[in-house]
Length: 178
Image 1 (spheres, rainbow, N blue to C red):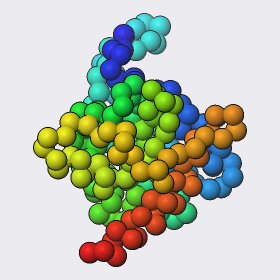
Image 2: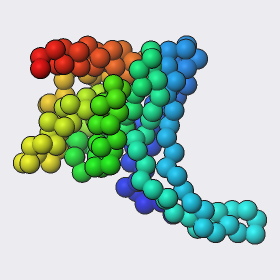
Image 3: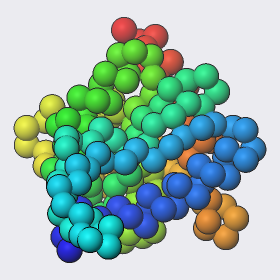
Image 4: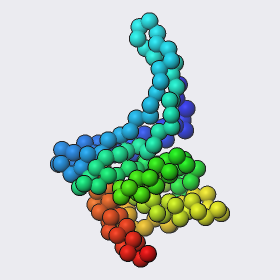
């Protein structure tokens, strides 16, 4: 039986999978859900897996390509008015940093359940909060309005590609400030 902690973001992930299928039919991008590799240790006589374990840590929830740019992102949900940094694992941050260093885009999509809002959190903002030793979370009030993600088609599509274009502009401006 699965514990509750490991499946907190399933509703958001399902929404993103549906969104990605919709985007793919429009030839806007190809984004896929990344499965965590599981090693089967035991199978019953009727072919049911009865015992298994995770072979290695996963990377992020989604990877793919949009308009010629590789993207990698994780989906997080919270009932709180902040996103606990403990929900974002070190190996995920390392993976996103590697993607960014190679010219890709890496970010988090968070669903704040308390007010049913969705935001794109750029890797840069995540790293800024991670560097601050006193912070244990990214507060809702720190969400940038330009990174709010709207839903469409009766709430069945999470229109994150528009927000992703805003992120591309943000990164270009931030890169020009160095």
